Length: 196
Image 1: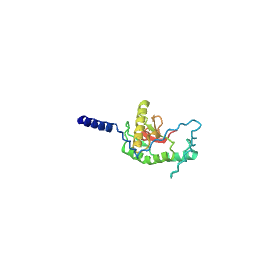
Image 2: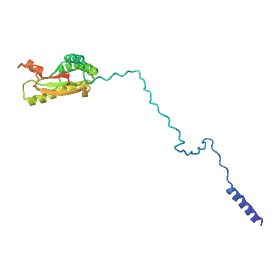
Image 3: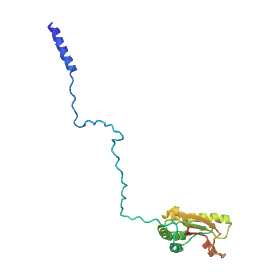
Image 4: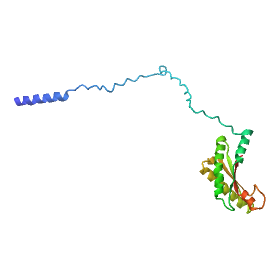
């Protein structure tokens, strides 16, 4: 009998320990979330009107946009600058930039950069030309190659390609009409002028 009493007592102690609940410990780091408040359209707070952001001031002043057309004085100044440019001359039946053409174009780069900085809306035209010998079709192709060779040289020197335009006149617009090597040399050229 005492052993039954002992088993029953042990069973009661274990049962009461298993059923005993401990109170949860409240966490101090996370506050309880507030209960949601239902709002109706009448009780919603009014939206705060947004003020337009004040423009930020920078130390640099922006330059006013230049008009697309030039004044007569600006056109004359541009033409004076362009008249200082030297033509790139080419050998007979060739379109490669030779040393004297490289020197002429290198000198032209400074003037071209100044023109494009002063007149950012202005494009420059590179005209390719040829002497009178050969067919019109052949000379148009040769003039185009010469103009593109000059364009390539100028863009490698930092001139923005979008501000350059290329055209070939072949033998149609000579600067000299004599039938001599000296005259023919003047016509085998790449000439920089203002684009219309």
